[in-house]
Length: 291
Image (cartoon, rainbow, N blue to C red; front, side, top):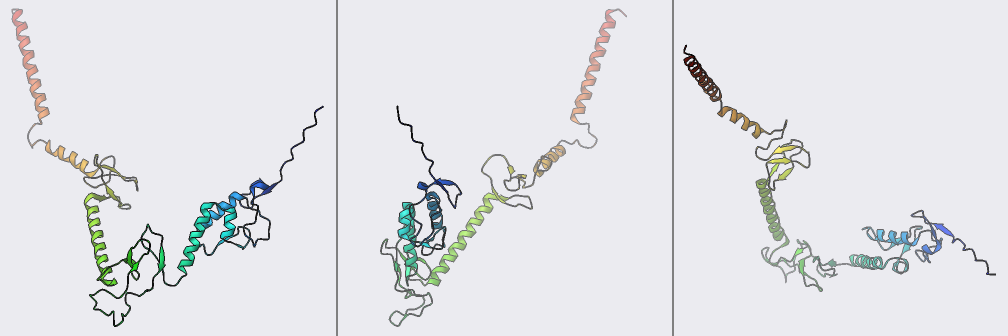
């Protein structure tokens, strides 16, 4: 006789404090979020990892990530036990940036493709007074030394955080940049005025550019129909230039005073022609009868 099968005992479940789902013990971490935690872990592994990822996206992250259940701070060694590998690398990067930012004289490279940085010895302001050995006229190159990135070799000016402007003071360089910016804005505004029109709806006036097709425009902001040619809203199914075209057509075809319209003239001529034909037929009938 075969032995009786053993009944499979149901595994004990615990409720996650974040998602509120009852999960088996294997779905929870084997260790607490930090070495300082004295409580039992009540956050499932998935929620804990998602929590860490979300905290790493917080720009206010300073020095570590707080435990989701107590004030303890998670350090790099804690993350390495429970977090995803990508999150650990991100934490290391942010922690290194935090330490670097706290270093006196530290500057990050402005090159978008370079993540390097270094201590820049001369953090002079644009109005700093140069020494006798470096004193020059206002038109000469200032005494401030450029930041030269050791990784990508990019050079830029620390006081005005711009590319290195050799032979120009920060003020002279910024004036040049401002003038160029003003010219670009003026040129852009002129181009927009030339190729775009304002929606004629007084409460809208959004700039609209026509990309072909008929002059009938439908505004995507105020949902009104308007005409590109006369720049007026459609009312009762027509715009101003369409109404004007109808008025012009009527005026062009209006007869001069005292004259019979062409259509009426045609009608009168047709009537006279019919009478002539009728009279001719009557004469022929009378002649045939010998009357």
